[in-house]
Image (tube, rainbow, N blue to C red):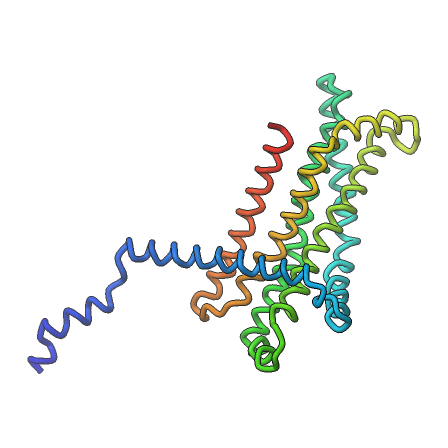
Length: 278
């Protein structure tokens, strides 16, 4: 018993049971974050290469891709269109009434278009697609991985990224761009109706002002912002679902994926503001 309880045996055991030092925990956390970002960038590059490959659009894969795009886009399209219309009417009314009280009526409609169409609509569409499409798709893909479906595809000679990941990413990108484009048209129509009503008297001045707002540089920034936002909400939630990190890190990985997605969207929004106004 004296040998078992001796300090030479107990002290190494206590050192193994003790928590790691602060610098070791920080280093491990940094390694996990770098690994997560690296996996996200790698999967994004792989998906981009597969999307540009003609073999991806062969007959069996094309049918699965089109089916996934339809299932991810069609159910959320009416609801988001109504939401965009209501948001446009409310924001237009608030801005117009405020501009009237300060004598800035001439700038009210331009402010509505800049704030609503250029900034709020693409960001809202990206978040809506993330909550309704890509995050649930990532959870479903993680369940398929835990069930061994991805390993079964590898053993059968198929590519899991091409078969399961690419259709979900393409559906998320298509849904985000479609919702952003349609809701921008709805917002422009609602803004016109909120200011001029159901008549065509203000159409010449409205189209002139629209052309002044959407200059070639602003249009280019708007298109790049919409595309990057759609890629962010499509790739990032699905990237963490492909790799097995163990049950203990599963929930932490999902939360980290959401944090990375919001961080990327924030960076895209800041870059678009700098490109439009500086």
